[in-house]
Amino acid sequence: MPLTWLTVDTREDIPAEAQRSAQGVWLIWMRFLLLAAVVALAGWVVDVSGIVLVRHTGLSETLVGSLFTAVATSLPELVTTIAAVLVFYLAGLATLVTLSDERRLPLREIAELIESNC
Image (tube, rainbow, N blue to C red; front, top):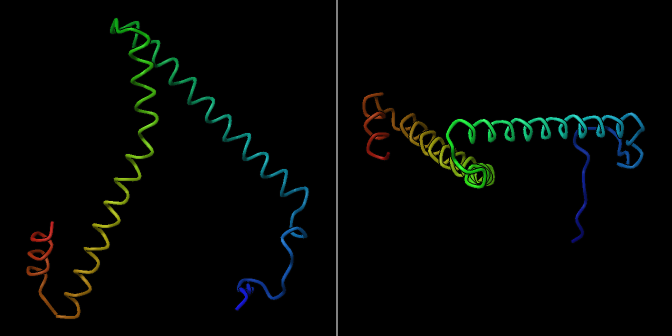
């Protein structure tokens, strides 16, 4: 069975190529350039911070650069892991609240259920 796409948000199908305009492409480029400037500014701030840290602590430039690089490259994985744990926790909490609503448990018993599952 072939896949077919149904339009949900519009009344008529307009091919994506027809929707693109010079203004849309210009807007995409402006966003790209703005974000590239933000990344460049952040890199400059990290560079200056590293130099100040080296001068004030007496640590070697190699050590400070290695530490900054390690932290910068591990942050995305750390944030993703923390977000996944929070989502899982909140999903479990929502399940407990839903079950307690169905069972008509008082708030004290809901709190005990949450504490026993944490």
